Length: 562
Image (tube, rainbow, N blue to C red):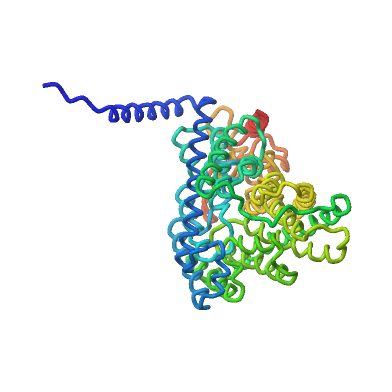
């Protein structure tokens, strides 16, 4: 009896599955060709774009359910009508949920965000943590959905990086390929989140990869466009903020005011960053002092935020309603100043309490309020030579955000793309240049790099500094008994003289010891505890350390200029 023939669609699916398996096998063995890589960039861009879209819709759905509003774009106006007890309870319960999620699914109770993506690109071959990353995305969604005062771009960037990391692991991508795929995912996520394809591509290059290599540009642009298409299919070709009309600028006479605004915004950005870090230190000290369980820390944070929101609901969530009000001149001077101060305080409380979210959207709000306050003063003092005060709000929005992110190019473009106002580019560029020039001297280049610096990850100084941390001493040493290893008695003599290095250390620790001692090699010890005798494992030669470091520098330079 003849076997029944399989249907056309069954055979087509089988052939497609076989082709997909064969493609992944080729990618694992040889790495992607240029065409395959561009196709992979498109697929990752679509995946990252949908993840950003679903994250945004998830926040809006949770906000609508938690606060009972059908228009989340006017959330703080609706929250003013709610009973005060609900405004207090909602972020508290949200904080409790966040605390439990981070307690059980992360090893340190910390939300992963953009700084971890930058670290993954620099030190971990374009990979980020999976389990902690998923938990962080969920925690950030709950934070923003229940009134946390942060932004959605940080979680979206990290969520997209989870997708690229998964793909990189499946195809056994090299470091350069993994970083490029991460850049594609980040570009698509930013573009899909803010409908900003140009800024999304440049953000990935400027902030995450931290170079503008030609080989990475085309696939990142492809992914960025894919993310934008997804955004526009869902929301249409509209900007995030609707401005009342084209702003007028008295170009030559008014430019000094924008130079001064840039300096003011740079200082505001530095204050905002330092307040956040100070709040983190204070929260950590207080938690340790009173013995507060780490899973309760976000709940206490939610309670504090709810207390502020009873009187000032403008701090709830991303804050686009207040930002729009500033850009359209609907606030008076004292409102702009008060809301600016309160937003900085609320962001610091949210992040110090280890709730989720990013700093980009809050920096936009703080910048718009700062610019509006400056503009109201400037136009009242010099009304005959001044344009609209809302133009200062637009320039201030870009200036503070650029200083916080350490990304003047992509931030300038994202302001243009989010507002649709390309006629005032000179004012925004002047303010952005001054704010980033000032703030980069007062912090470690940006909020994200300062975060990493506080954790002992030194990326701000460039690859010549952080590459040393990529090499463990134990992987480069000559074990005892090998021909190149020095005599054991000589090594112990050096140990007695205090010249040695821990086997678990990196070249970041070993190189200063070489510099100070002038030794050609260092004993490598296993330091197992104060009461245990150290174990001698071998010796690290200075020449081997330098060879590895030089190869890494050459590879980095080749990647950045390819």
